Image 1 (cartoon, rainbow, N blue to C red):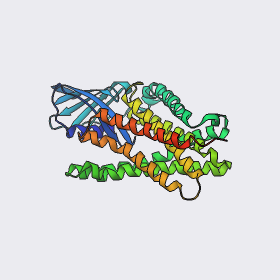
Image 2 (tube, rainbow, N blue to C red):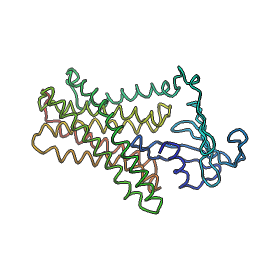
Image 3 (cartoon, one colour):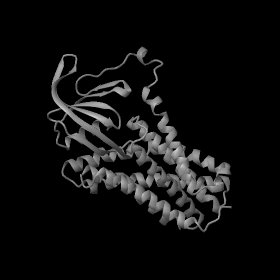
Image 4 (cartoon, rainbow, N blue to C red):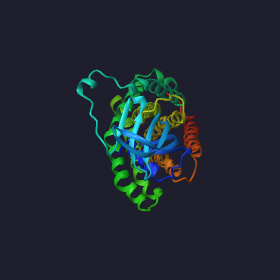
Length: 337
């Protein structure tokens, strides 16, 4: 289910009235997080959809996550989307346009170029989150190797977690919620699967790097932090590429920054857990799975109008900073060799 399919479901569960402005997160299975929707219902009019095809539609103007115009019928069917930043028009249930090969040859999507500042910003933020843990570890080759490998390991998420979550959302969550089931109860399985897969990948990577490079136990916290930072940076880049927004400074950036802080902190904690030896890593590992899943679970509270987007962002920041504070207190007596 792509972004437009999700928008159709989003508006189907709301009252549509001309003049209303909506700001709320929407869960993205591909991104495994939420994208903030900001849209205004500008008018209800008789509109030319394509060539000689006309219909009466609500015109909904989005300013986030990217500027676009969606056209909904009175019975809440999405029949057209106009996305200026991508030079794209999408027609649903009407026509299917396929550009000629000659039109595609040598063309670079504007969105890819426009997202480069976002990618650079994510890298800067990701590196900034490591200052709490790395210290002299910036001089170690294995630290930068761990940062790179953390990003590469996120590729496994794309081929495992993303398809699994999309399947669970489409075949379990949406049908059950549409039939009157609890969004909170049926949302647990998709979010827990994300937390389990991500934390298992990070833990496995830290262990593999330590084993391959014969790294001292006292250095595993640094290795874990760099693995987590690389993982978080690539996750942020993947999400922005999926969503396609081009605004650099907005609420989505704040959300991604605190999520990257979480990944770096959780990586450091997982590295610390492995340094303890035995099976003591299990408790910290399970705690990280739960916290990771909570991040994915928060948007459901907003979608069900249980709380506001502002409260959700505050909770995200509070959890990330709280975990960082706890980790720093835990590590302060450990000396990096």
